[in-house]
Length: 421
Picture 1 (cartoon, rainbow, N blue to C red):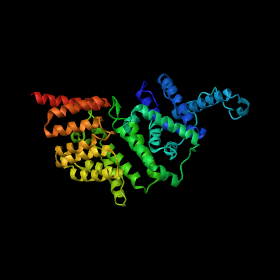
Picture 2: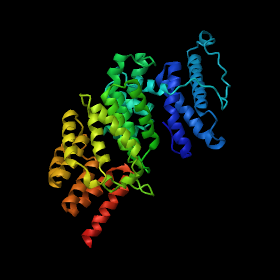
Picture 3: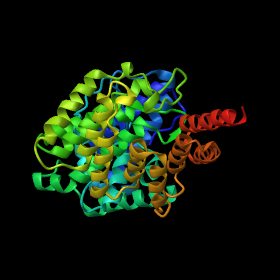
Picture 4: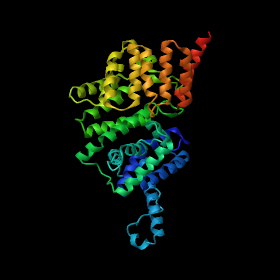
């Protein structure tokens, strides 16, 4: 929703505030599509004005009132077009010349974002459309980034988001926290959205930055709020644990120039032990309660990595077993990709490479850069430098992430030097 052509600190602030303000405006007017348009206009205005005038004392209030003014202006235009000024004149008794003071009072609480999250995941929408819409409205992801997460073309995703917004407009979905039964219907989509927002923040799929901490931090914050709402749900706890255990490695996974450092080369002394302890305690508690879901299994895998003091101490056999369970539970080619890596660590790279051949027939991942990147890694481990170089270069051509591209090209260059030495 937000341009990158202004100061980074302002950009991060606007991303944090956007879903909160959108929630408040949608709650007041009940028209999600119009509210999103109005908030987008307010964000554009803020990007231009704050750059020169500075950030107001109450930036959220500023955005809210500008968005409300935009909504009112649009409504007035619509009223004029339909020649119904007299009918709605009283309803629109609003000071159109109002310029929001920097300390404007605003009735917006943080829970509006959570309400927005559940509203966008309404069962009136298809699961994929609901998730895509929520990633845009709550996560602030661009259409291309969402398309990357779903492994579909950007044009396809744009149509999906547009249809979802229209469905909400015509369905009369109320802006309110759903009932207990409604929450249960929407929870799967809500958790998947938070997972994707966190994933995009932890490893950005496009651009010059390896990580977008504004997204990963927001995903963790919302996951904590969902857990407060549903403290007994094992998958909610599992997802939060997964985020904490993964985010614990954040500082160690990039170098001084922002370059990518893979897991097996990270300085584990830089890992956040407080997050690791919290995540391990959380997943240990939820696993003891019986029913196990995919987020719990992924959190258990992350815990095994985080509890190993050295990379050679990692229990890859246990990780392989957990990926086997996860693969049976979910139809996700990325799970199969990770299982192939674990199998290579346990039984050798040839076994991992054989498992990857199955994925060549899966249209969701065939041709994806990660498949080439993993092949390059496994061929390197097997000593086949020629093929490793080819796959690293192919992966570098396909990724839209500059840090990942640089990492893959550096791997290919290093192997090329060894080959020619």
